[in-house]
Length: 520
Image (cartoon, rainbow, N blue to C red; front, top):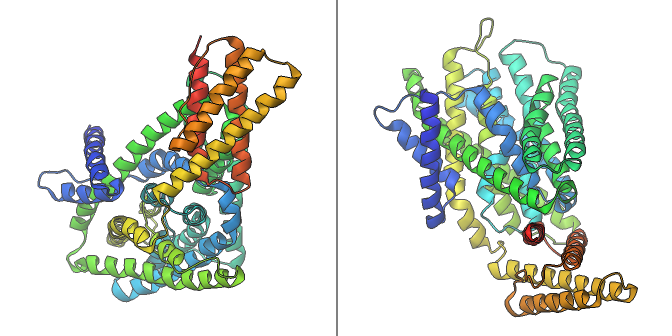
C-alpha cells in the first residue's frame, strides 16, 4: 500500500514541480531530483527502495521508446562516425578512468570498481532527452547528443557484464567470450528490435481502431525489451531500434486523428514516468546513505570526484574528435559545439537500472556494504550530473550563441509552409486541366490556399480555413494536405528544413486532416 501511496504522492508532486519549473524556466527533472532529496531527508518519510523490476520493466521501455522516436534520422546519417567513436571509445575510456579512481578513493576492490565504471560510463538517453527537450540546439548537435546516449548502451552493458562475471561470479574472461557477449548484446538487440518493429508495422497498418492501435503502440516497447532480455540481448538496444524504425514510418502507419491521440497518450505517460523516476532517484539516496557503514562517510567527496572525472574524460575525448572533424570538413565545426556536447553528458535512469541489477545472493562474492556503496555512488553521481549539468546546460548553450533563435525557427517554419502551399497550388493547376474535380471547388480551394500563403508571408503562420463542407471539397482538400505532407518530407530529405520544424508542421497538418474527418 505504501508503494501506491508513494507513486500517487510523486505524481502530485511532479505536477506541482513541473508547473513551477515551467514558470522559472528550469528543467523539471533536475528540480524533481532536488525536491526528492529534500523530501527523503524529512523526518517520518519512509525509506524508499527502488526495485530493478520497477526501473527495467515499467519505466525504461516507454521512456526509451519516446526518446528513440525523437531521433532525427536524416541528421543521424551525417554524424554516425562521431556517434560510433563516442559510443565505443569514450564509454571504454570513461569506465577505465572511473574504475582506477574508485580503487584509489574507496575500499571497493578493482572488480567492483570496474562494475561502477561500467555503470556510469554511458550517458543516459532519458536524462539527455529530458534536459535537451527545452533547448533549441542545431540539428546536427541535437542528433549527435541524443544518438550517442541511445547507442552507447551496448558497449556499457558489455563492460558491465564482463565486470560482473569477474567480480560477482569470479568467472574467467576470454576475448572469444567477450566478443560473443558483445555480438549477442548489440546484434541480438538490433535483430529483436527489427522484428518487433516489423510486427508492429504490419499490425498497425491493418488497424483503424484508435483504441486497439493505442494498445498495440503502448505494448510495443515492452515486447521489444522483454523479448531481447529473454535471449540475453540488450533490451535497451531493442527498444531503441524499434522506436527509430517506427518513428521513420509514423505517417505511413495510421491516420492523422490516431497520430494525435497517440501523441497525447505518450506525452502523458512520459510526463508521469519521467517525473516519478527522477523523484524516486532523489528520495532513494538518503535511505541508502543511512545503511552505509560508519567508515564510508567520504562518499560525497568520492561521488564529486567521479562526476568530475567523467566530465574531464569527456572533454579530453570530444575536443580532439571535434578538431579532427573540423580538419576533415575544412572548418565546419567550431569550439562552441564541443563545449556543448562535452557538457551534455548527464547520467540517469539507465545507470540506475544497471546498478540495481547487481546481484546479492548466495554464492556471490559481493557483500551488502559493497553493493550499497556502488548504489550510493551511482545515485549520487546521477544527482550531481542532473543538478550540475541540468541547471547550467541552458545558460551554457545560450552563452555560446549556438542555440537557434525563436526568430530563426519561426522563419524556417514560415518558409517551409510557404513552399508547401505553393506545391498545393501547383497541384490544383495540374488537376484543373484534367477536369477531375468541379471547377468551382478547385477555385474555392485555390482562393483558400492563396489566403494561407498570404498569411504565411505576412505573419509567419498559416491557420486552417474551412469554407465548405461538400464531399468533393473535403476530398480535394485532403489531397492538398497530402501533397503538402509529401512536399514537407522532400524538403526535409534535401535538408531544407530541420527535424523539429518537420514535426511541428506535420502536427499542424494532422490537426487539419483530423478536422476534415470530423466534418459531416
